[in-house]
Image (cartoon, rainbow, N blue to C red; front, side):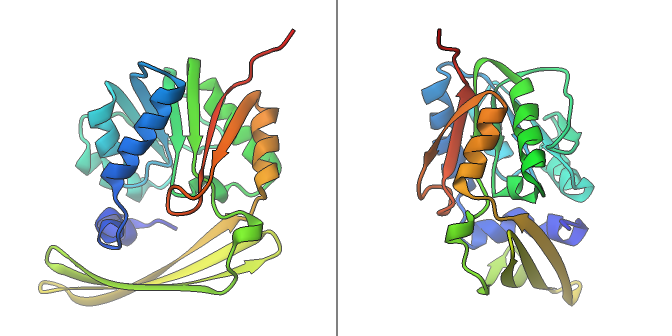
Amino acid sequence: MYGREVAEIHDDLNSSRGKDYRSEAEYLAEVVRRHRPGARSLLDVGCGAGGHLEHFAELFEHVEGLELSQDMLAAAHAKLPAVPLHPGDMRDFRLERRFDAVVCLFGSVGHTRTEDELRDTFACFARHLTPGGVILVEPWWFRDRFLDGYVSGDVVKTGSRTIARVSHTVGSGDSSTMRVHFLVADRENGVRHFEETYEHRLFRRDQYASAFAAAGLEARYTEDVQGGRGLFAAVVREERS
């Protein structure tokens, strides 16, 4: 999953398919500062090949990234040689500093497999917040909004390469499986084919809310942003006397 061949084309492919990393980063920075005025530092968990992080680096004084896939991390390193990037699992990582904002985008949190893992993930995020900091999480699709059997297909040209991507996503119980086939063609290498499979947990919205609460966080959800999956913004819950 998220191997070298995908890491090589990931951000260029998604940009060509219509994903605007710059606009999303600007929107997310605005949300961060709405909750944490003057925010200066940000950690991107599941940063992938650095598509958002390269723009966060222009919008915040200090940014860092965390990524489980070594191939994705290598691609991000090539793009952002001056940014601290860490290998790690979102469910249990320990960095030496805290951040004004912790973000987890592109539905990456859906790779957690159980509610316990989701709670551990949010608790881990919270441990890396400065006082008054904010967590932004773009969920994977909620179970009641998931389209079983969904098919997606695109052919794009980026630089000297032409890339075709076709996917088929099916549900089974509370999980989804996305199988993606890629064809990449260029003058030097001809045409090559590879495929990847991605597993996500189809949590309900109330399960996300419960996991945030278990981590001592109060979360609000905004509909229909981030490609339609929405966005949770969470802060440490204030104790009421």
